[in-house]
Length: 315
Image 1 (cartoon, helix red, strand yellow):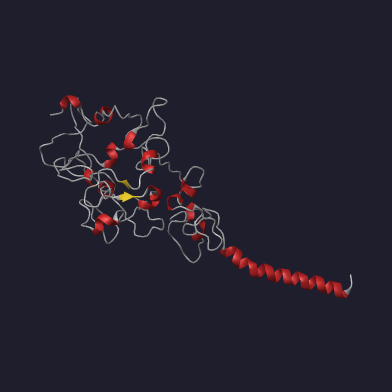
Image 2: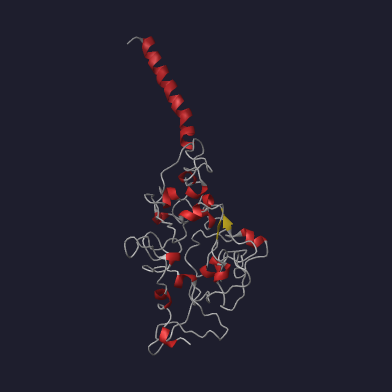
C-alpha cells in the first residue's frame, strides 16, 4: 500500500473515531437503560423510586431524554394509567400487581362511564376520576415525593417499614374543600395514622362508629355504616366465642375492624388493597367481590360476617 493510501486509511479511521465520540454522548443520553441495574442488596431503595444521586442512572429506567417511545412524560407508554404496568404488569421485571375489577380495578361498566366515583365517599366533593386516568399514580407517588409513612393496622401502632410510596394527600380535592373527616395530612411523615385512616380519604363513609351520620352522593338523607377503627376489634378470650370479636354496640366505643380485617384481598394476583381472588370458586361464577376473602360469593356474605362474629352470642 502506498504512503498516500495509508494516509487516507489513517485519516478515515480518525474521522470515524471522532464521529463515534461525538455520537456517543447523544446515544447515552437517549433511550432507556435496563431496569434494576443496581443490586438490591447494595441499594436503598431498590429500583427507580427515589435515591437519585450523581452516581446513579435511575431516571432512564422510566424516562428517555430523547427518542422516547411513549408520549406520556417521556415514558414507554402513551397513557398515564399505563406507566406502572411496564414493570408491575404481567411480564414486567418487578413485583406484579393484578388489578382485577373485584379489587381496585374497573369493571367493564365503569370503564364506559364519564367519571368513576369512589364507593361510599362522603359529600361534598366525593372522589371522582375519568376511567382512562385511574391507575397506580392516584394512590402512589412514583418518585417518593410527598409520601407518608403510616402506622400498621394494629393496636401496637408499629410503623410500617416503608412508605410504600403512598401519597400523603391522595384526594386533594376534598382536602381543599374542608378537609378529611378522619385523616389529618401531616407536615412530616406520619407517625399516628393507619391505612384505615388513609383509605378514608376516598371512602370517607366507611370509617368511624355505626352511629356516625354521613351524607353520600346518590343517597338522600343520612347514611350509616359498620364500625371501622384504626386499631381493629378485640377478641373474646373464653367460652365458645373465644377468638371471635367482642360486640357491644351500645358502649359508644369504636372497636370495629380495620379495613384490612374485612377486606382481606388474599387471592391470586396480589394482596390488599390491589386484588381480590381472580379465580372463582366454581367455574363460571363471580369472583370474590370488593376485596373480600377468597371464595366469598356475592350472595353468601354471611361467611365474611361469621368469620369475626360468633352469631349465637350476638346481642
